[in-house]
Length: 320
Image (cartoon, rainbow, N blue to C red; front, side, top):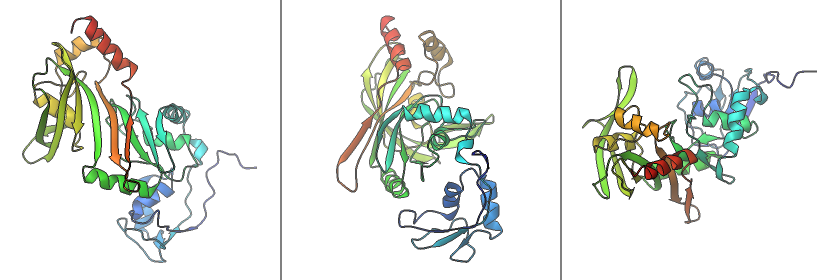
């Protein structure tokens, strides 16, 4: 009798594309369908013509249509229960961090310290951990991203149609995302809209974002919540979703984020460590949008984590 952890026995499969799956690229469909198979092998199968669409070769960027029949060649892939114990543990941790779930969507309160995707020396991230915890889930994809050290609201789509709809809202700036950030010093700018052009670059082998006229437009509204001399708590409403947007704009305004090792102030960060801050003080506090189907406003919020609340308490006790 075969072990339950044996690889799935390879066999040719023919998959008819449903309206739900229509519209996605062939390579993305294969990566999702052939869970556990390296991407390099998926692209090799495409190059060799072993994957067929309607009995013919197809390019990776081909957009699938409802009714297409995709031939999947025999390919060994690990059984779902082969996920690492660490990955399963992370998945179970995320299950307890679910703020809302329905048939189309999961809203997570992502803990700080876990990346949204595996890579860069990490064997798993949010999406890999969720898939390990739910091996029978037919579809789980990130709607957007959060930095590894940022906690708070993160959306995961359970259906391709939900992902498409939410991506459309994101492109049109129709999803409202608000963050809580602790910044250096006394914030005397009041409520202000900061607009910059941000460009990704490599500096000293590390990816950084700089203000550059050749970059992409970024806009955020910074509103003071609690102003102190040492540090000020702000609510930030981002109107675009550029990499490190809040961190770079706050630093450019002369008020870098507490705990920001990349764009922040070293002495300020040392001071914040004495108050117990062990990571970036940035939390995705809420996310909301108008549901295209029902017209209802959907809003989800994640409370400030205990570690960040404790920092604020110590700041107050110090007369910050």
